Image (cartoon, rainbow, N blue to C red):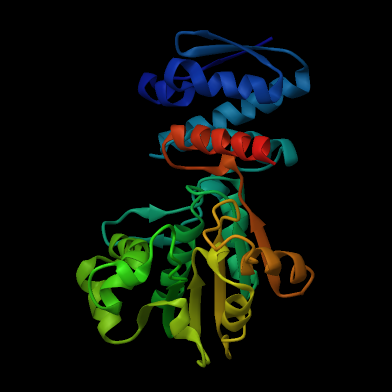
Length: 317
């Protein structure tokens, strides 16, 4: 048996989680019994597993001590990372700052797969990021692009989405073409405002340094010295995906994000993202990163909601 005592009671509350939920999860994943005694824990089980849990708890406590906010997904990531490499330092994952926003908020990876995503962006020119909503695919892609722009690694950013009729018909929506399309692009604008501030974003868009446009507007162009992000790529057709990928010119990089469980294309129409996943995976220079339900960093109920829909879809199949 091993006993560990933590000094700061406020940090202990965050480490242990609501109703000791974090400890319960660590116990489940490690097969170590964890008994709580105030701000101390007693660990019982296989000696190697006890050593693992001790490293997990002490490193997470150190992160909280450095103003890190602990999410449930971080628990799984910490256990997975230290199981894979017991010399791993969690601070190297969670404190890898990509960009500091206009409000001085540091954007960092929140789990092991987000760290893989960021590392891949430093080594590859084209990255496909696939997984459920709430895993940070789009937000991190945009943070990586904005960081590249501010460091002078690229001359401009192009953000694009397919304007798919997700249950609505564009022709019957009010307004001109711009007003009909803007709602599809709004999440991209919101992320830019969060990272750069409203005025700076507006200035860069006016200068043409940042462009936010529907995917159809990419046809016929060659994008040199650009960082391009294609969001909601599951709603591209095969033709659109090929068109997009062949727009990249010299010194350009691209990140393609999507969730293949939320395809809004007409029944029977092939998703360009699904097709790309099947035919491009072995091309050198490309990297596919896969996120899972456990990587969700939104409200804890989001993961449970997605799990419920996954079960429903499996039943229907």
